Image (tube, rainbow, N blue to C red; front, side, top):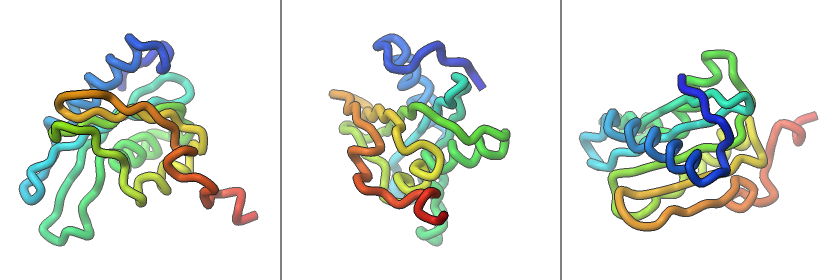
Length: 140
């Protein structure tokens, strides 16, 4: 677990993306051949990484974003402010619907930075990707 001073500043975003790209290299992706890494930043600045872990039974595949969330939660951390997602594709790959919903459980205002192997970065928020979302407050 590394520390991130302040995601949002350009140097911090670039550092976070480097961590996500390094996590992508660890992916187990024998079927899609697409490596994805995530670097999830807690509100206290801790960084949790994850990579995609594919399975021959495709529905059991774990995305990088959810792997990072699971790592953080298993360490007792449940509050996040940013995530960087990097892939081996030339273009940015946005989080899937399942990942968006899992991230929403812990941070409705999450800042998201997405980058492919080359080319531009996409900066967005979870609220933009999952408008009018269902969350914990809807249950009580």
